[in-house]
Amino acid sequence: MDLGLDPQRRRLLIVGDPALSRGLMRMVLSRLGYVVSVVSSGTEALTMRAHTRFALALVAARLPDMPGVALARHLVETHPARAVPVLMFGDAFDRPSALRDGAAPPLAGFLVKPISIGRLVGAVKALTDGHGPPVSAAEIAMPVRPPLDLARLREFTDGDRQLERELATLYVETAAVYIDQMREALDDPDAWRRAAHALKGASVNIGAVELAETAARAERSEPCAALLEELAGQLAAVRSFLAARPASAVASLS
Image 1 (cartoon, helix red, strand yellow):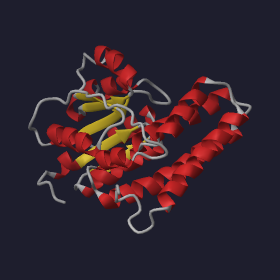
Image 2 (cartoon, rainbow, N blue to C red):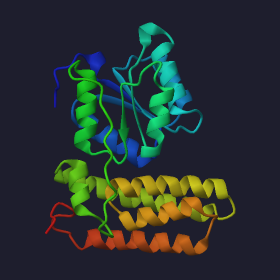
Image 3 (tube, rainbow, N blue to C red):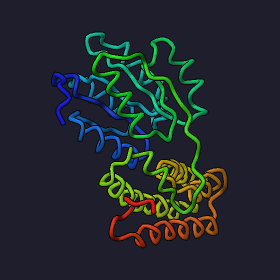
């Protein structure tokens, strides 16, 4: 879809957050005609900004090599001719400190996860087409229907049925990778918690509530084989739940 934007205003940079979230954002925004670059760290973002102009950077509040606010300062203050406005996203508890620390230079906005597709697209359009004020945050409650809340998924994708199917498939594949990472980290508490945190975020986004809650417990605990098996069982339940709807995958709520 052509948004009628000039080439420079089509270029977006997404920095940080688990691969599932980055991949989803890229998929959606690319369909709308944006040219989207994705990196995982602040260092990679600064290297890319040195030779590419971007209309907007979407930056996770927590990055592996620096705070998101520190990257925002570099993007906005360093090299004024290449200044990039920053829309930050993160957990609700990240928002107060991010807005306080990001007051100078000001962030363009802060989105609280999980973020619906409609909210994401609305924010990006407002900040790249020159219309509308900076985006304010709105908290979205965690869904409550295990093993997968299809209503939450429909809300997250704004009813795009093909995207629902693609996102559900991507989630199952990515969650399995995170669980494998946790299995390999039974003797490495830090790696265990990083993988559990990534699994928690991906599960909240998709509406796999029970799995998200178990991942949150795992993130707060020491590596535990019993928790790992619980997570594997819950993912199997999500996979079976989706497989029971072959005709329309996750497109139908009936």
